[in-house]
Length: 258
Image 1 (cartoon, rainbow, N blue to C red):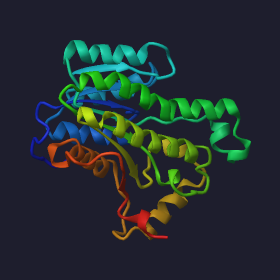
Image 2: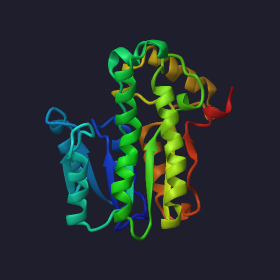
Image 3: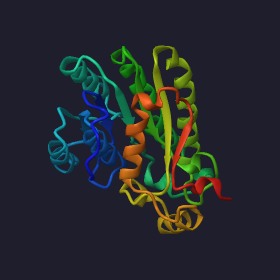
Image 4: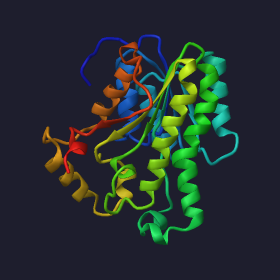
């Protein structure tokens, strides 16, 4: 990653969702660190730890901890570590999503109520829970990010249950922006173009989505995790202090083309 100015020097950021060095969350962590931020990162479980912890060490992350939002108490434990170590938080990046494979790969009509509920809890409501814990630590204001996708707004073939779930996540961002605005806390839904991540591998015919993105993009190229990371880093600065509540597309303009 090219050297950049330390526009986030002293900034404290929690980044949730790193699985490997191809993750959107990792692109954000790299960009925030390159911009001078101090990092807290998490891994899903002990199986993921050997893949994530070395990345955190390379980035000089000051706080590293397990976090499965489905496990009672783990989310609260992460924020308690942040409170004890830093006493504050400036930004939060939520980059996690999940749906059971059988529910994700079938159509919405065939999605089970249990699978829909898990997808909604992990992919959407966990962001609301994080926001509630983060807000008291953002006494001087802050920024929250949640990762969405164009399938929240339009039907994307094979995106299935994640479309309604991401639509709910974008709505949650708008309502949180409204509720937290008086506390100078800004909230953004980030909608990158399709990226080759492990999470995307569960979507049928994903290569076709990649090809379509290139074809429809006015810039004629796919975005990468660095593009997403630096856009979020900008939004976390005072340069973007009057931007909140919207969905920010980082897709080379593909969303504007029918």
